[in-house]
Image (cartoon, rainbow, N blue to C red; front, side, top):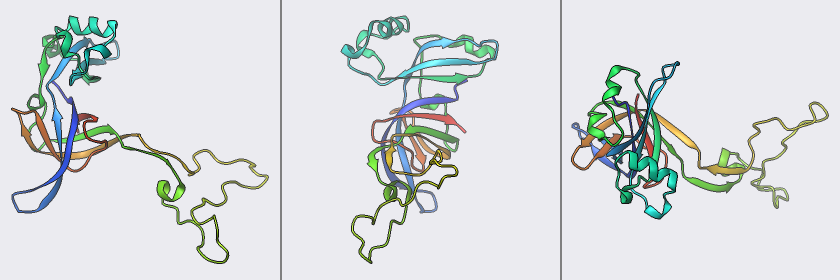
Length: 214
């Protein structure tokens, strides 16, 4: 019924498989997620759930959100920190899903599943072309002074007389939505709602992650 869940990154560490091989893993606190509202299938067959995860301070909740949380049966001090809309199938089983119910990681995944994880990468601030794109920079000799890490020429002559769109230049680095596909579920702790997956995903600790079946 559910094909995705929302969680937050705990940490990145390592473990060992049955053959003794060391593998990098990411531990994610996935769930429990509360269903805030249900969007029934439209004429295009799109049906979705608005789910909430985590707890945030009550004073940061506006009146509109308070009304939605109250309809979902959540206490005033249990306002979710994250809200996310996930698409679900348009079958009859969706009629059993009601606002206020919840689900956890063991209801969505099992060990060995292939998944994809989306998150916001760490922000690096303003970066030059050497750091941002791996440029080699200019020569280090022959009177070199301030051009060692410069990008060099960026444009053309009279034709076309402009800089092409998408030109690799200095600018803001990081803070982008990144999806890592074909990851494997290594272990699930249903009691603590901890999902352990093979590989590394985008984002810092406690950042929001969307985990979907691949």
